[in-house]
Length: 478
Image (cartoon, rainbow, N blue to C red; front, side, top):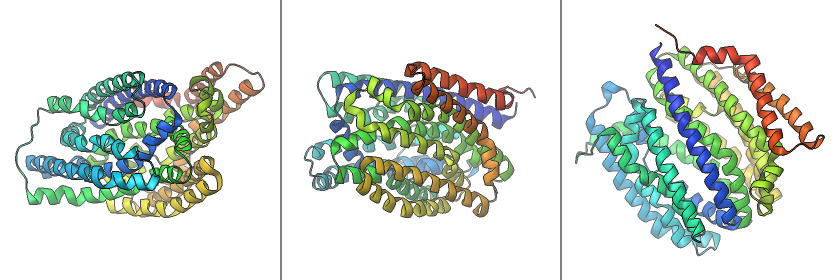
């Protein structure tokens, strides 16, 4: 079997297993917490998360990405020790900044006194994240994704169970705050056990320059990405209300959380592989297009169900108090389907050693998106914000395709991209048509409609690309 293909398949399998476990359990946790808590309490977490998340993207200074991307022959033990101690000291500084500077500013910005203590508690995740930095980078670089899946799956389950217990005990918003940092904390001892790596008191200026030079651009890009992805929370929380922010963030979590988790699964596997094959653009292009195809096949049916069945799904599972999230859920589900066309483009550009280009492209997107979002919130509230997100995803596809066509050696045309996703698109259109008729004309139970839609989509995919999928997944003998 081709070694690269074997690593990719094993990586996707174990990352996929992690996704299924984490997402299934996260969904159950969100379902229980949504029934126990109020939209306003979710909104408070959304307000706090805007500020904590902004700093979170700067926590590791991009060192993890730099350690994974760096070639084996250029990587020494001192690089790992330097990255660990720099990251740890940096995280302590950020935690103090969040507790004594950012938290009071957030209180003044939102006029919400409860954020003064809530933000430092959530920021504990910032304090603990760098401790796992080197261990996770080592496992990712070796493509040992089974260990990562086991560690994060177990930590996620423990954190979720404890959050539910806290909610039942009446902890309210603090159960959500605990859930936001608990997983990374519980994972710490397991990561150290998995790698048998221990930090030594070593720090080297040249090693710092090696990882910082790449990492600072990666962090800059992550920061711009964060602003793009969270400016909606900031504006809605400021100009609307905590309850509306809770409804919007709830819809966003249901849709974008699945997309982001899947992206993490695929990118965790493909980033080190892209880095290894930097000198083989034809191979990278082939891998990338297949990743886009598989992304769409996995995500489209889930988003299609949200788009088609949003109202009965929300009202039956979560109750009338979440009614305001129905239309945003539909719009955001459609936007995720568009984003899947270029969902992995940034990690590819970074792995090719072009973090500067990646950052410039993200800045261009931000310049267009932020004003349109502000207008959307002003003119249409959370529904207007959702439409702004939708049109931003279309613009993202245009920008990404321009970069692939004219700024990189890959030369991926729009026709090639559409050819890879046609099965998912056709399957979605047919499944939606049947689902719409069954729900609105035949008045079938929405759970039964969901089952039929998934079956129809799967049938179309099998008919159009089933043999190709089996060929790619079937082990090949040497």
